[in-house]
Image 1 (cartoon, rainbow over the protein chains, first blue to last red):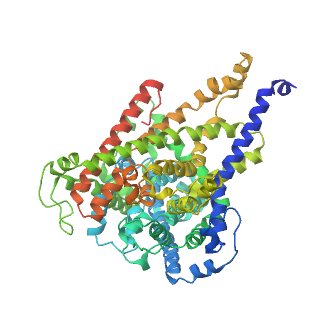
Image 2: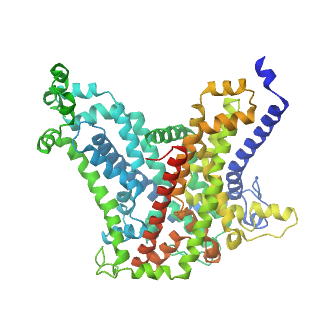
Image 3: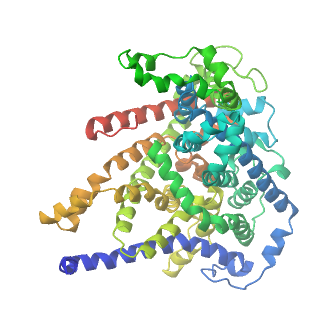
Length: 292
Length: 328
């Protein structure tokens, strides 16, 4: 009854308007995906003529066959998988170890250990000193140039630390009485209790590594070492005739449907896991916000 | 860890001591030697992470001294000898530097102006939705671009804006000539900011939506009793309720102001659009990594982060004075 009274004409107009705006948001977000998808299935002349919008024109799978028959595409795709797996594993090990240490409130020097990490959130060396360092360490053209400099994300570290701090101490103390040492407690008591959190962290890191391109672009000179993101970037750089250094620049106009197919193939893994990972990410953002 | 129990009985007995000043016992620190003997296993877990921070975070910070030193590629990491402010003077008298400086301010300003308020608006609109399923659907869809690689975003932008892309199809449909957007300097800022909106606005609502659920229902009730309509409720209850979140995010946004989407600019610009697109970070990238003028680029980088730091500190202070919200 009361709500009925309050639903004035203005409110009803607002509701309709709101629905229209939100629908527009959805359309604007999805539209580019559908357009790229349509282009990936269309033939070259239809695209050139500017006829492809939401539906493919001259439907064919030739471009998919063409791109997937390029061995460099698969080499780079495999690189992405390898880099993501290795980098995520190492980042997880480092993050868990340090977060566990930081979560022990009784530890002497804990504040200093926390500060060492947090300071790097606000001060960074910057592009040039990092580049000089990686180069002089001889890490160029190796997977370690991608893995090592990104081994700990401080934001993730703090989320993990907060999680460990919230675990009940009694279990660990009981395990200590049973004669387990610190490593044993971490491996057999703490980690099994943290499965959900670890899964979230793995997602955080692996999506970031999967999507990253700049580190590889910066430190890899040989095309067989590139991840698929840089493969794509070289395609689009070739298409605009951009001469930003590092990548190869060709005068050959790379046909639009090849780009579209590469976009689709690069995005597919993310789109497939997206429905499952989305809520973990949202939760992670909240956790981080509560900390910060 | 294994000895925690045996070495820590004071915690239990402290209460029974009663009068013998427990606060002092709390403040008293165990000597390092004892802490090491007891917790060496814990400390051992911190060794590799500490090494990581030292080598990959703190060494580069110190590495910035090459801004004031002669540096030779392949030579000493920290340069050969001091040259004072030579490189600083060099960029201060470099016309291109001031061009990219202006571009950075404009691009950063536009991004802040557009990308900061929009998530608030979208969150408010989502908050008014009654159907939970519709709300969740809109959220899921609008979060999606956040999960894409920036390369993919740039590639999609180029597909849309190509001469045969959908935007030009629309222009032709209304009788306009096609525009080579990507090649025209005049369009770069619009393109950059729009793509930024597309990618970040949905995801940006998360913290606001969380803050909105925390606004006290009683305040709305009270406002209603006072005869406030929906607009005034939003203005006087909702917005003040999420103000701390707004201020925090504003300060953080101002902090990244100078670094304006370096990777995205690098992907979207080309020599034709340099007049509007080239920003400090891309300029120093080309100077340093491409042209090997490391010291010169490091000097510019140092200047850039100095401005960034000043901006955060200023914004933080103003925010604390004005509305009582601050990062630290």
